[in-house]
Length: 86
Image (cartoon, rainbow, N blue to C red; front, side, top):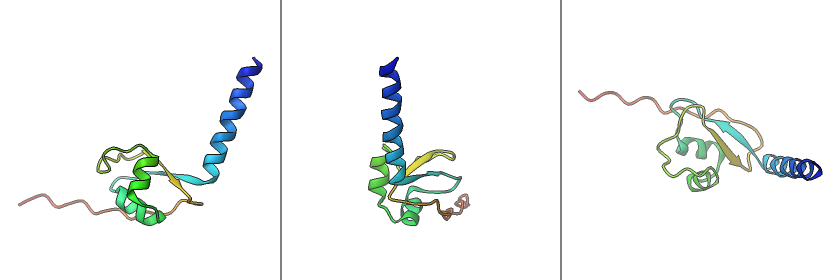
């Protein structure tokens, strides 16, 4: 039991340390990795790597992205929907 308690404490400390160096952003409909990266002044490559995103065009609403170095959430501009072809 002591081992489990120690492991829980260690995991909690690691998560707290990571969280203090950045924040989590919840993706809203219409937001892109490009806009999120620009808003938080980080590169798309860095966001992709940290969040293990293999295809940056496939963000989903509700997805949580870790933003390294950010201290607070920001409002991210939403790309307007594309007009259907005529």
